[in-house]
Every structure is written in C-alpha cells, then in structure tokens.
Length: 416
Image 1 (cartoon, rainbow, N blue to C red):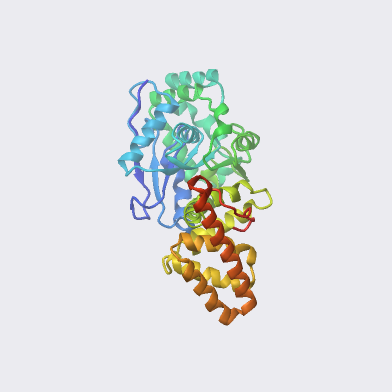
Image 2: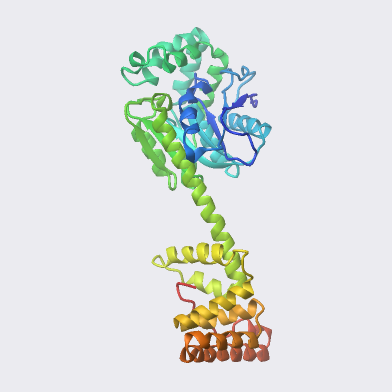
C-alpha cells in the first residue's frame, strides 16, 4: 500500500493565521472540492465562523490532486490528509467530509484523535456498501471510465427534480467534473472503501460529531445516519429536507448553519474546559488538595452542575483575575462572609487566608475592622471561628506532619 499525494487550498475570505481555527473539507468519490462552494460561501457570511481557516483537499486523481500510483487504504488517505494539513501549518483541526470524504474524516477522528477537534460526516458511514459492490464499481470504471457512471450518479447524488431546477448550476458542473476524474484513481478509492469498517470503534469515539443526511438519500439513508450518531457518544444527526446524497451541495445554507453551530458549540465547550481546569488549579492552591478532594468526592448528580459552576466562575474567573492579589481577595472574602452571616464558610476561608499569606494578627484585624461596619455580634462569631481554626492548626502542628495533613475540617458543602 502507498500513501497518495494529495493537494489542497485555502478557501479565500479569512486571514490564514496559524492561530485561527482550521476546518478541513473533504469531498465525495467522483467529486472535487467545488462540492463545498456553497457551504464555504455561507460560512464566510456567518459571524460565528469569522476568521475560520477553511482548507479543502481533493481525493487522489480528483481535481487538483495527482493520480494514484498504487493501491491505498482509507488509513493511507487519512495520513495523506494530515500531510497536507501539516504543510499548511499543522496543529489540531475540525474536519468535515461527504461520503468517502466522511469516511476519511472518521478515520482521522478514530486513528488520530489528538489532531481532530470536531467531526462532521455528511451522507457517510462507518461502513458503506460491501466489498463486492465496491469491487464491481472499480471493475466497471476500469472497463468503461468514469463517464459510464454519470447517469447512475445523477440518480444517486441528487433529489428528484433537483437537476431540472438547477439547470446549468453546480449539480451539472459536479457531474461534468466526474468525467475528468482519473479512472484508476477512482477505482482504487472504491476498493479502499470496500475494506473499510470502523463500526466497532464508534462507541469509544470522543470527538464531537455531527451527522448530516439527505431526506432522499438511498445510499446512506437518514436511518443509517441516525444509527451512526446513536453509536457515537454525544453524536447528533440532522436530516436535510429535499436533499439526497450530495446534501451539502443541494442545501448549502442549511448545511453551513449546522456546521457553524457545531463548531461554535465545540469552541464553547473548550472554553468551559479551560476555565474549569484553571479554576481547579486556583481552588486547590487556595483551599488545599485534601479539602477539594473531599468536595469532589462528595459530588452528587444533583450538585454536579453547581460544582462545575463554582469551579469555573468563582475560582476560574473571579479568583483568577489579576486585579487583586489572593491575599487581598481573602481579606474581601472574610469581610463579606462575616457581614453576610455565612458562618459555615468562614472556617474554610480563614484557612485559605493563612494559605494566601495573611497572618493570624492580620485576620483578626480584618474581623475587627469588619465589626465596625457589619456589627459586633457578626464579627465576634467570626473571631470565635477563627480562634478554633488557629487552635486546630496548633494541635496539628504539635502532633506532627502526618496529623497536620488531616486536621479537623468540616465536610465541604456543595458550594465550596
């Protein structure tokens, strides 16, 4: 087997800065990257995909890519796509593909999950057809050329009446491009499809996946695409009304809308993940690993969302802001908790204040100052709690290092 040489190009309309998100688009068997023209135009007009780099890559012997020089597998095609991406700057990327392009996109997601951030499969599958059917297709092309496929492809690719309504449009151009595809390259693509099956890998796929189908597609039916999405954790399927196998060409605006939302949801999830990780680092630094581990261990389905909320927003956003030092934030927190009468939280934040560099004398001074504005009873209760914390710390220190790591501490509530 050989890794074929593929060629791609950036769609115009966005600065090719390497820091911008990258979307790789792969066409179907017998078509070129022009298949994506309508979707690219709609994505360029969508503010959610502003700045998105769009790299379109042709299959072997299709469009700009040279003819294949030997047999290859779908895994080889995935490696060839990665080579083009690396030439264009490398890094992780989103990938969307139609039919064979979707198969290659799935292989990228399964075989190279560290590179793929998001997956869109349009009218595709984890296995399409049978080895015998693809072998027969390859033999037919070798015997009669790709021109012999035009009539059959027209029936498979487009919904009833589409070509009549589209006279002289992208549908006719796509059929015209089929005639120019290298016969042997087409045949080898068909043979590669005949040996591909990633069905058993779907359940472990961790890449966010959107599956698109065409209402009239008899090749990769809406039912089969729904099954595909159901087998992928978190997978989503949408059927495009009035479309068939080349749904992204027939309904480019609808396809682009769904792709833009899919990419935006991935970006939101990534940002939330970063905030959560940052928040957990700050939370552990301020409250200590033992305390946070107890809080996490005590999480229930009912409190999980709130735990995520405080980790991301309280610790990942507010406590992580550079405007105040952690010492200063501890001062503000102790004063606020005392003023609000939130005694359950005071002990925890007295410990945090000590971690953040406040001395016992400074903590007492904060509470004395708070008494002036929040009232003597509230400050008196806070001082009593602080004295207990100090005593616990002294007792732990006297008992030795092993005991100091397990000093008395109330079980964390769901909001700390």
